[in-house]
Amino acid sequence: DAGVIQSPRHEVTEMGQEVTLRCKPISGHDYLFWYRQTMMRGLELLIYFNNNVPIDDSGMPEDRFSAKMPNASFSTLKIQPSEPRDSAVYFCASSPGQGKNEKLFFGSGTQLSVL
Amino acid sequence: DAKTTQPNSMESNEEEPVHLPCNHSTISGTDYIHWYRQLPSQGPEYVIHGLTSNVNNRMASLAIAEDRKSSTLILHRATLRDAAVYYCILRTQGGSEKLVFGKGTKLTVNP
Image 1 (cartoon, rainbow over the protein chains, first blue to last red):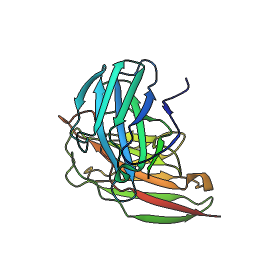
Image 2 (image 1 turned 90 degrees about the vertical axis):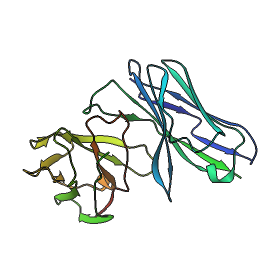
Image 3 (image 1 turned 180 degrees about the vertical axis):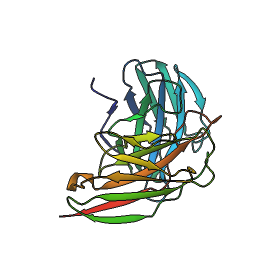
Image 4 (image 1 turned 135 degrees about the vertical axis):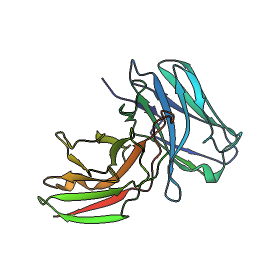
């Protein structure tokens, strides 16, 4: 298996532009997570899905952020409009299923720079 | 979720054992103890997890105190490739499936 695949690997954009980050989870995994990592705040969970349904979006910073999972093999995280403070590394992770001993598998991340 | 406390940083020499501590005094009876690590410029990766008994796998060992209020991740022979941030995380009974990361311990391995 190729693991969790994220694209793009790097994104540089200007303030005010729309940014879309993409994630392909591991096939057969029921859970998908979006995290953001900055030096100041560390790794923060933004939102997670179970069977394509958003379960907890309490970590989404504001209405400029939205996430979708139209099918089991694809998810997007959109920022519109983007701001310099959104600059961070965004990670997607997937997990096989329910259970407190289930592992999360992370992608390599998208490095976002908003100028 | 129950909290964990880890030292901010630790240093080790190559090929020596490393013991990374984690305190979790408010752990509940059915909380699992998970360890992840994050190598530079990569996403976190699973290392090991346990409930009550000590656990071993190809990457590391996990020693859990009898009262479960603390645990130690053991790297038996550190290599330069083990330099990473190590996160100790509890998955709480009744909690959701999300994994909440703290600040972790940054491990430096000296050649």
